Image 1 (tube, rainbow, N blue to C red):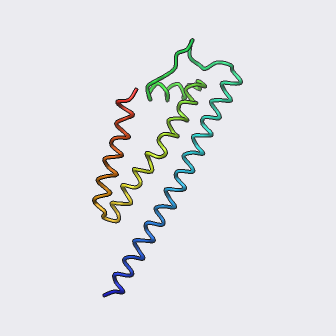
Image 2 (spheres, rainbow, N blue to C red):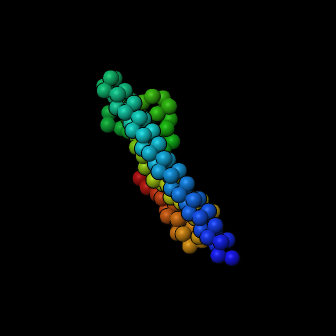
Image 3 (cartoon, helix red, strand yellow):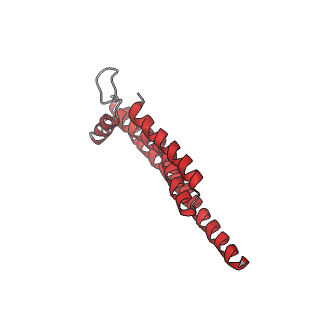
Amino acid sequence: MSEVIEKEKQTSGKVLNEAEVFVSKSLRAGVLLSAIVISVGLVLFLVSGESGYPGETYPTLLKDIFVGAVNMKPFAIILAGLVLLILTPIMRVGVSILVFLKEKDWLYVIISAIVFLILISSFFFGK
C-alpha cells in the first residue's frame, strides 16, 4: 500500500518538475522574443527617424498596435514587443492553471483562474 502512495508522489513530483521546466523555458522564450521584437522596432525607428505615426500620436488599442506592427511602423513594433513582454507572465499563470488541474489541486486552480481572469480583463478595460 505504501509503495503505491510512494509511486504516486514520485509521479506527481516528476510532473511538477517537468511543468516547472516548461514554464521556465517558456518565460525565457517570451522575454527573448519580446526583446527581439522591441529591438527590431528600435532599429527601424533609428534608421527611418520616424515613429510611423503623425505628430505625437500613437496606437493605444491592441488591434491598432498589431495592425501598425504588420505595416512595419516602428513605434507599433516596439509596443507589440512590450505587449509580448507583458503577456509572458500572464501565460505563466495560465500554465499554472493547467498544472494545478493535472494535480487536482482545486483551491489553486480557482485562485489561479481568478488571477488569470483579472489579468486578461485588465487588457480590455485598462487604458
